[in-house]
Length: 250
Ligand code: IYR
Image (cartoon, rainbow, N blue to C red; front, side, top):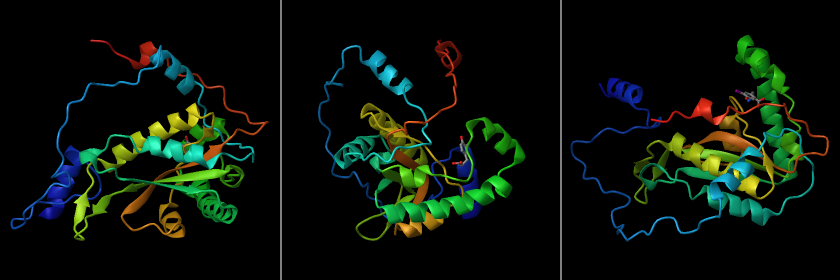
């Protein structure tokens, strides 16, 4: 049956929650049908000592949960999101939407949705093992950063697209694509001297999607507060694994 087929496909290789099967009758046309190929000389913008400099910037990033209310230049946010949009994606479907919220009332509404759900999450939905593992990070259901940070970026994955003729377009590996784009966004924000946090508001996706008036094919992946760390911001003194623990050379 189609259900079985979907399950086995999903188990062998998870390309996304929406998967379509061949129709015996339909003619298919690629979205990229008219794309020509051109010579490519390779990467041409090279930073001197780029790998080391980029490491230093990336290694300076910390997940920040306490923000100053100091304002952020919106054009910088725009440039960082434009950068995120350079990410690779399955069949070049670019299955992302970055919603930027700077409006105070909307941030407050988002905070209420998330704090209400997180109260349940921390008390009931997350296992005791999970909350114990998180204990040292000092997180809880109260999230002042959702109203203190000047901007919230809600990252949605488009689990499928809609073609101009109304047909659904499969978005292969959409979660991987949007996760990679989000990683690029984190780096861009860091390069701009901004702080951020990847937050994963469990069970809040549908309510936030509706609040922001997003269509049903968009699902919330992560939410990032963005801004400057508060003067009294503290982070856990974590260590990153050394190279020899994360790289295996063959
Ligand atoms: N989403 C919750 C809980 C949380 C989960 C993990 I895994 C973290 O590394 C941190 C927090 C929250 O935002 O508090």
